[in-house]
Amino acid sequence: MAVLDLVHGGGLQQNAAGFAGYMSVETGKTCIGLYCGKPILFSNGSNETYGECGACPRGQRSDPSSICRQCTGSPELYDWLYLGFMAMLPLILHWFFIEWYSGKKSSSAFFQHITALFECTVAALITLLVSEPVGYLHIRSCGVEKLSDWYTMLYNPSPDYVNTVHCTQEAVYPLYTIVFIYYAFCLVLMMLLRPLLIKKIACGLGKSDRFKSIYAALYFFPILTVIQAVGGGLLYYAFPYIILVLSLITLAVYMSASEIESFKHLLIKKKRLIVLFSHWLVHAYGIISISRMDKLEWDLPLLALVPGPTLFYLLTAKFTDPARIRLEEGSAH
Figure 1 (cartoon, rainbow, N blue to C red):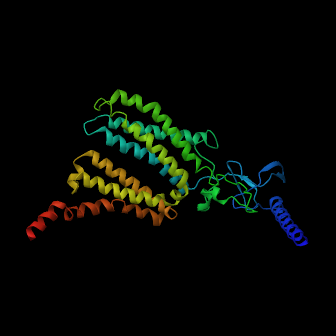
Figure 2 (cartoon, rainbow, N blue to C red):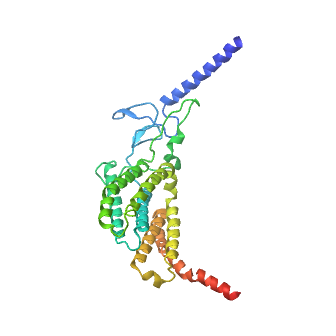
């Protein structure tokens, strides 16, 4: 019995010591956990009263002293480029499905393209206006320091391996939630404007095909939301390379499907030139995102590489024509 009492007493003493240590860290200068902070309850000059360690309020982030401080910085160029990429995704998907379901003989595709551009532009402006500071076309940001800033929920500490201190917060405020707000406004504006437009001008389409581009948006908006929720941090670091790869693939697929094998074929239709210049703009956007234009004298010449993939395709298309390959194989036999 004496041994059991000693064991139980030692265990209680250890638990008490651990809890006391946890409380000492909790009430000390810094909090445990990577993103835990103490909110400021009262401030009078240099005297401040702090709350308990936990998640900082929205729009704040813990400093090195584990004090929740208001985000007062401005987004960097790379942050704006990331937001621009996330804003372009719905617009590009809108244009793709509008073109896919409109048909070659339909004259309504152009007006739907303009409407989709109007919807996304207005949604972006409204999103900026409702963000802090409200009523202005600029936002306050905490900035991004590392990948873990996007996934604070994975870094909630458990000091005694039983109880968890929940410190989940938006450490990259507002780069994470502002995308969801933008998608919501895009969806609302689409549902208000597009059905009325299509009903009036989509006379070249059947009744079952008129609203297919809207139905497609009802699918891809939830998909984009899930992608942002799960992979927002990964997209933040990888989006320039995603832009370059996708722009190259889509350009090659379009030119191959349109049977463009020379400069003459490219200049026959204005639509092909519009598609080409659109790909060039996206490609230039990716190059700017990678270089971040830190040194203009070194980075600006990189934009001369934008027409490179197009020129390479046109110069080598005649050597990869399947008909010519089959003809050479037949003559060899």
